[in-house]
Image (cartoon, rainbow, N blue to C red; front, top):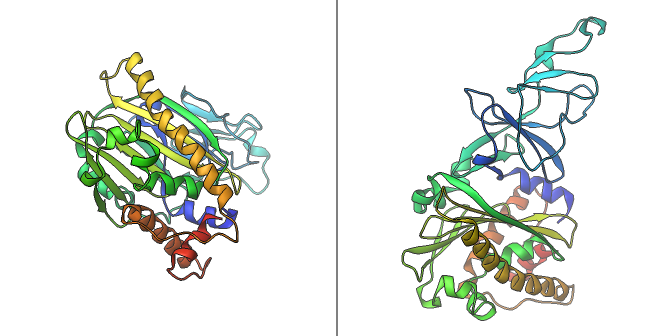
Length: 340
């Protein structure tokens, strides 16, 4: 994905950047999203906030990325000692009397980004121009409300580098045509017979819903920008993302969550192994597909079980058309050009 369309497309949507349980009041957490250093804070008595992790004075980060949050009352720049509270307001700058033409603390607050809690995640948008979060999550909020509103705890995670464009990996996870064939002893057993597949769509989200062998419904949501949420009948949730890197490379990021106290360590390890088995099967497929796509290749017709792919590709194309970045017709060949 080229930098310019990645920048525009990513800025149109919200990103799940941390589990709610990863941050507590009075804590901060430094992360990187699409090469941009961010800082999450949770002022006591308030809500989580998101800022650019850089001091407005000379751009130096307040703290390095970490796997766990840190308890602190203030943010202090390690370069010149500018000190901020967790709301992002400047409290003091070293030797303020030495600045020429006076110094206005209020003019040097941290650059804040939209931030919200929704479900078990903290979400951040990189600009004020992102679509409303409730639109991005519409189907999840209406059809998985029981699991989405429960207290959750992290139960495992994994990362894999894929030698393919993120769009191919994202397409594949929306591809309900391949599951019974490519994953007969793994994912297919969870999703059940193809005849029972039910698809649902909102403006930005699509859903595959199938009866689960253990009872209830197994739900697989696809939502922009490159995100998938899997919901089991017992309330477990998996968050799967394909994060862009270079043009022909992306990172698969998998995070598992379960209702508090419902899954022990042995069960969590088995669950993670189970998911990684079919995701490793997909890794071989998407990397092969990437090698097969070149200027001489013309993709075949779309199957009715690929309608979730077409739903997302139409959305992606519309976003780029809106920005004047592409001028493509609606043919399958034209859509396939977006895989480059």
